[in-house]
Image (cartoon, rainbow over all chains, first blue to last red):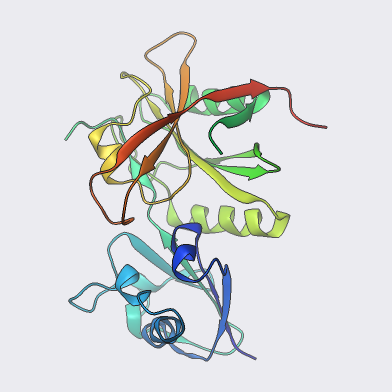
Length: 95
Length: 143
């Protein structure tokens, strides 16, 4: 058993195009560290210098938003799926 | 992909969704397969605003799962401009975080104007980007 992490299109350039990674259980932060170990430079795409989840990145553990769980400390167990999503927004507002 | 191949039926579906969403902007995702758009995902504008949109993240996750399950690719993001041109605004450029075509439906025209753009950034987090228009090729849906 392991944890599946789904990588969105925008981040696949940092994972050699890999869309799904199989990782060891841990917290969301541990998973990001595991990805960064394999693909150096990945971590800074999703975690700020202050050590928080980037505000334009949403993390879902199974179908729950990690922001409403324990954020980066959210525990991810064997068999869970983690999905990273960039926020998609915009609009005609001119400033 | 230098052009966006978008079947007429799917253009109609996007336009209908955008008209129904007035006075607010409407938004959604597009799935692609074989070099053309094959599916429109109508989504909730979580910003519920006439000048802003944001995809509801839970709906976005569901759409991404469906796209993966069907073997499709994320083919684009669409939204409406209710009173302005179908051209990326400063907000559209700043908040563009997917490296896919951005389709804008302008309801300032009758019939609505549908145009597609790439917003090219060095880093996905950059606030500035270069706007490159992609011709929209409309045609019948492949069998």
